[in-house]
Amino acid sequence: MALITYLTRIEFDEGAIARLPAILEGLGVARPLVVTDRGLVATGLVDRVCGLLATAPTVFDGTPANPTEDAVLAAFELYRSAGCDGIVGLGGGSSIDLAKAVRLLSGHEGPLAQYTAVEGGAAKIHGRICPLIAVPTTSGTGSEVGRAAVIITSEGRKLGIVSPHMLPSVAICDPELTYGLPPFLTAATGMDALSHCLETYMAPAINPPADAIAIDGLKRGIAAIRTAVSNGADRQARWEMMMCALEGAMAFQKGLGAVHALTHPLGAVRELNLHHGTLNAVLMPAVLRFNRDSIGAKWDVLAEILGGEPDTVIAALSAEIGLPSGLDAMGVTPAMMEVVADGALKDHCHATNPRIATRDEYLELMRQSR
Image 1 (cartoon, one colour):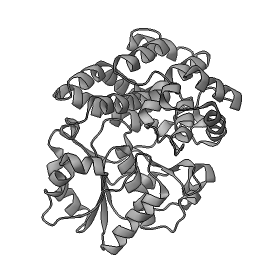
Image 2 (cartoon, one colour):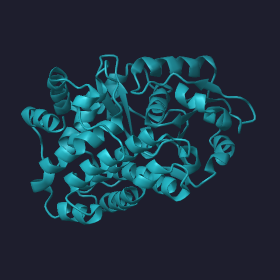
Image 3 (cartoon, one colour):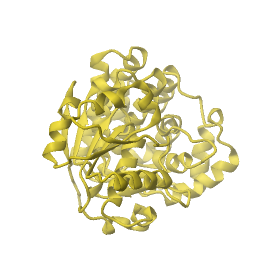
Image 4 (cartoon, helix red, strand yellow):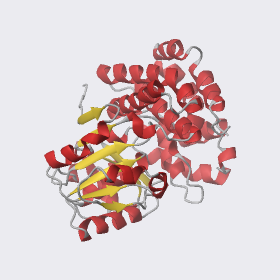
């Protein structure tokens, strides 16, 4: 069967952030909690967005690079103590995912692990939760239109909480908010968006609309990422990369695959705190090769779009835009790989790869990515 579900209200335009007060009013939110991170606060962007509101909102700026349940609980305590009635997730995927988890707690009791996909938690999630507006400031995760929040639980596992109820009430996608993103983060988040398009297209579920959206996102992203990295003020490149990220996440309702099955447990390695998009870029060439015989003619479609063998093109692109050469350069050790391989088998993305990997095959994929 084909299960096809889409999505939420999206306001996509340069300057769309100016609509924030009206959107909050329309949702009946008078006292929002803004969930963000300290790095974004330091840029002045948080003050700029908060300044659009007639009354200064409560701000939680403690989002870590890989959001944790401890941070979610701290943000929720602030939400409750300040009498908030809605949430604005402002930032990259980490801030938006953390905002989603705080929203979940507005109508559910903890702990978070019981709501994760691997624990069958979707059936426990209902829609009696507060409104959430997602405002991305990077072009990568697409969390603003995704039905998942990926959180490191109190047990130390990086797991997805997946439900249609996790979709934000509204997504405000304003490319202008990404103009100040540095080249490295532009590259890393951009490769995250491309990885979503690639993995979704390869996933075996029957969903032609998702495939079409993924292909459109891939075409836009591959044409724009170099310019976005080299000239962050290029308006068209920033627009295209934000659309690529949006489409990648719209499409991955279909499912992701082995790249994300590995990057989730890799992101949970506390002593490294690795960037998700960078990991996706490093692992993608090996996973593409691993999937080749299982995806048939899709390999040729990807080769035509990318202008060469997909694994070779992606590896060369990552090097060209300044991303790490491999897992060794990122500090990943063989001992860590052993733990990650176990985690990959339990990840919710494991089962939606076109070729189901064994533990030894996950280890080999990481060795090829060193």
